[in-house]
Image (cartoon, rainbow, N blue to C red):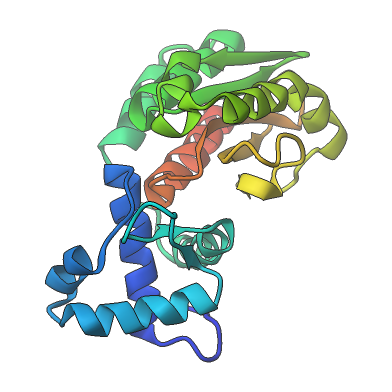
Length: 241
């Protein structure tokens, strides 16, 4: 796993723990929680956190003693996951099998297969699911998106809405060409202040060689799981269609 030259393995693990814990509980992660997890003192964790803050990987919201990941921290973590997933044999977990079961029943109808894959992603990730079907953008689970604590505030909601409004023309224009593309927070081409992550997979379908399926949710994500499911959904559709 590649990391910042001066970053230790333990700092890397603490960053991962902060990201995973924050994805779970949606509130800043404190040193006491991490001290229990790593079996070291809170003071040790605090000094490691200070280093991670120096690198720009975590930040401290004004009202809290805990820390939350920054977009830079998420990007670092996602790059490490991408490298790890790329080198491992893909595991078919329960979620991947659920997508497979639903998609394979619609092999003769491309539009239904794509919709059922999106609906599965919505259920499994609790994000908004999206896919291109010909010249249309199919969206499902908008309620999931706006029930996230991050998107209760007006400015975030507007930025996410702007992102959704412009997503289809942007996908056509940019045509992201990796099997899996991850745009975190400010990396998003539109709605940079939305605090949202877009995770999409490109696949070949009867409609186009550049069809897309993916999810849009808060930057607070279980990236390993979500990336694996999105990539699997794209691969599965390509196989069935």
